[in-house]
Image 1 (cartoon, one colour):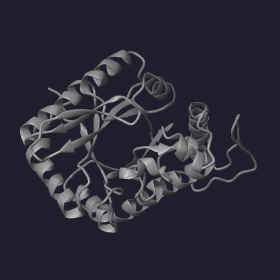
Image 2 (spheres, rainbow, N blue to C red):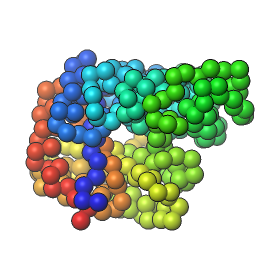
Image 3 (tube, helix red, strand yellow):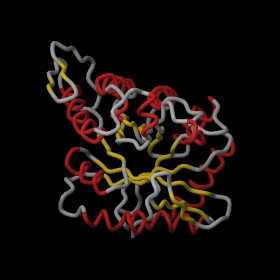
Amino acid sequence: MARPLIGIAVPHFGRNLTPRSVLSVARAAEELGYDSIWTTDHVVIDTSNYYPYGRIYESIATLAAIGSVTERVKVGTSIIVIPMRNAVLTAKQLATIDSLTGGRLIAGLGVGWNSREFRNLNADFRRRGKIEEESIKLMRALWSSERPVFTGRFYRVEDAVFEPLPAQRGGPPIWLGGNSSVALDRALRLADGWHVTGMHPGDFEEMVKGASGRAKPGFVFSARLAVELDGRGPREYVSALGDKRFILGGDAGSVAEQLSVYVRCGATHLVLYLGDHPAEAYIERMRRLARESLPSVSGL
């Protein structure tokens, strides 16, 4: 593939959060030809992690607003922490967005990492991996039948009506987030794609190679990446989870080459976050990226 699909993570969180930072950025992303628009999920983060996710619009409600002001671009969640939500309600919300947008939704799901946020939502942090797996099976059942029946360890659905179904037959594609080998294995077994955040390209390449022969046709390897367009070069940092993360940066040519590395490592969809900036500055960075860097991104 010569060029991956390129998405934009909408800045619906942080110091510069305004309605304009959501709706104007979403409209601009579609106008500039980006392939997808993404929201981030935190609900009631603990105070020690206030920045950048303490001030945030809720992910699914924000995605619904984005869907209402766009017409063609895909919309997705990067990612919904499904074990700290009710999966039946979440399935209904996502089915509604998929129906109202004419089948434009990608459902990104993950297990989460913040135990205090789980506690604030009275959710089970310890069993979150098992809950995620059952939630995926439940959501697919709900999205596939107007009279669904499901019996699991955590959920039971019977004598139920689930209408309208999503516009996409069987429901939107599910991508599982998480940078660990456990997350990748789960995605290969249960989902349609794997969605990492800030993973170093060398680590990404190693894990994609390790999935060779196990990924079904059409399986998506996706990376959400932070990009700094202030002239600084790429850099690494350690996340709250203690894992190594990579931030892209430098001039237009350097950013294009860094993105191309991920493509050569197997990424077919890249989601870019351009920093905590006011709406107009964020849109200007999107324009610069689309004009100066993205035309040169290639897996060749």
